Image (cartoon, rainbow, N blue to C red):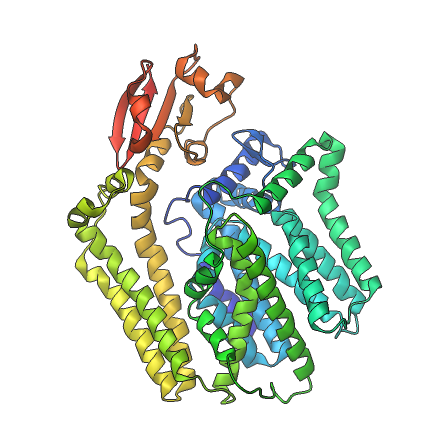
Length: 540
């Protein structure tokens, strides 16, 4: 009954309003477009963008999106629906694992801590690959941990290999790298003692290989090695070079996790203590303690690995959400049982970050209401033009942010007065509530500024047999939102031909005002509109 209740609550949290806002360029639209092109081309073995091979990602998540689109139609809801299902599965898994490690209360706290933290919750309402990838690789590591404690250790090894294979099919060989590093660091930390035998490792490798070969093997047999070679080369390049526009300092992901995983991240600081206590005093304490070691190892491996990687994108460290949420839930569980007390500076840090987030939420409506006063201080011409979008705001909407600040402070006061359960529930439930408000109320308004005019332009071209091209910047939106079909004339891929050649059907273009100078004066182009930082052109 508890599983059904958790599934229903998770469904209510993650499924409603999935299509309330357009997909965001790049990643969300990228994956959705790949799924749409699978359906259009009936080519389900290779990932494509613009109906050309796209070897940056393997196909599993794209298959899930394509299946969702076949069920619900090609739309934004369908593109995000697979992650909502993964969100439901994640909370059920956390409850089940927490219950097995300790008791039902621990399982409920873990599910609540995960759902009640900003980025872990928010990503289940997105159309990016990472929530699905993270879920599979977490299960692979969990079943590897279970090998030492299960009477059916070989079955655990098979399951670990199977989910590792699914992770590879979701995002690529980085899953193997993370898993191997986690296993190696755990082995070193545990002084070369581990409950996984060579036979278990062999089974993990075998089942991971069988699972991945369902696609890699077929692709090699059907089309040769070139697609797989390009895929592997891209993965190596991504790890060793800085992707354009996605660099950042070494501590980039440390800040992302501290702020983005609030309030769960705050409870990691409660580990900074001068003395240790017995965990639960239960027979399963050794398993619980060992699992905690696995989670610390996974957390640091992922965090340090992606701090070293040159390309810095927010969701690259999102695999940390599983160990971080467990380690936080572990402390929350002890707090609720009276086995741990938060120090004053822990509660102060909780207040500071909560207030900062609340101020950011309250500031959004003020930016919209008083944008005319802010514009003279903004040096970016494109950003200034974005702010010209007609979006309705009122000062009263600052109340959402103020309410969150008040609830965080109330939570801190309750925790400081040792009303632990009430304080924790207030903290995490209020965060869940404000996340829902943000997704439904604020995100669509922000999207109108950032890309709304461009998306409207592409949607206006749906059903028309035309060429559509973005000039001066990279985008996938023109393909997805114009519902582009394959073009028989392959000159289409040549921008110079579209601009100057003997085209065989109308051609439309879009550029940002910061790049528009050369295009608005192009002899073959005429400006047909300009809105919120975007310039729309047509071939004469």
